Image (cartoon, rainbow, N blue to C red; front, side):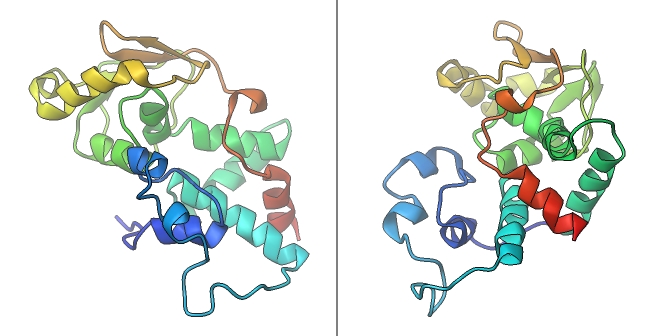
Length: 208
């Protein structure tokens, strides 16, 4: 499976803002944006005038990087959003938010989306009682996301159990902290998605 393997702090520096790709590190002085705010590269500090198309491309790349998906995956999500009734930009964000790896992250079962993706890949997560190993799987309203019984004895589960109390859970999800399971209560509306994205610019990028 293809995935981005370079330093993710470079992505934040390229965007000029924190994308929160490394969990707790993003809130510490070790954050790449805090230490080196200029874009990466020898000529990163130069000021460049960006065209309208460049701004749209930057927003699309930002969405890809935040949710950790590659170009082909992102195009599939956009195609699915376009085929649904409603506002395409909001549909796209809903498609991305309902990915299983994002649901695991939003429930507080992982510190970052990349860690959530690894948790799913390693077979620690169940959906409606069945083991799920596909991070891109689309969760549906009413689905219950939990831990594989055997994984509850591991160090990862113990660490998550200790830190989950200090994490905010998306209000379109219902977390049962005692059982360490969560349920998709509803499809997230735009006001419930705190990701700072200009989805209209992404729609304009693909509509040109």
